[in-house]
Image 1 (cartoon, rainbow, N blue to C red):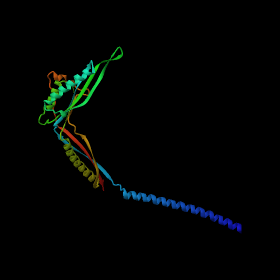
Image 2 (spheres, helix red, strand yellow):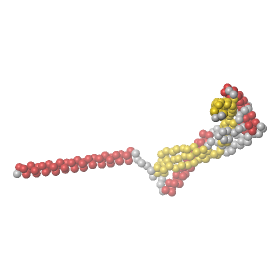
Image 3 (tube, rainbow, N blue to C red):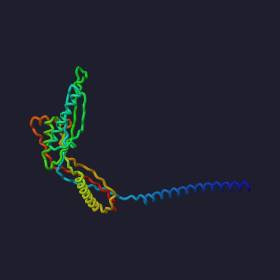
Image 4 (cartoon, rainbow, N blue to C red):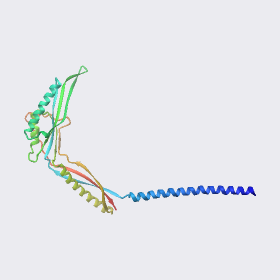
Length: 264
């Protein structure tokens, strides 16, 4: 009898041990589930996810450029000494500056954009030998008030080349009130985006709510660009008596605005 009771107690002990293990596992699952549910609920309360849509509009402003930047320069090739190259270069740059100042260009509107001095090498009998020294200086000359003097760009280029400029790398036309024009284009782009958003919402049968943010993208607005090539244009033809024909034209400024709406 005693042995039977011992065996029975052992079985009940094993059963109770197994039940306790299952109970602990169930409780652990419930606790984990509660934690996950709480985390999801908290995320929904604190960081509510709204449906959003972004609509893009464009604003276009047509304007007449009233200023320009002329990029021109002087190239000196194969002088016997480096000092000779620099002396010739400096003399021509000074002459160019004085010539364009007589046309009303101020000292502050004549800036050096590049300056270089380098050795010229030639090959003789498969051997590289020094054949001279080259020097180059590029000027960015800003010309203003084109609305009252439309031929000023032409005159500056003509006088500069007569004074020694042998490279004309391009002319860029733009507006002195460019920031004001950008603002006008922004307003037009926002109105365009708003109209598109309302049309889309009506079609999709939703309602636009508050604006969550916006961005802008300045697509274009730089004035007319006349580029005479990467290597520049030899301006010697102007020195022979010909005059460059450069005409300004209307330019278009384009601003893009994207608006992000909450939708209901």
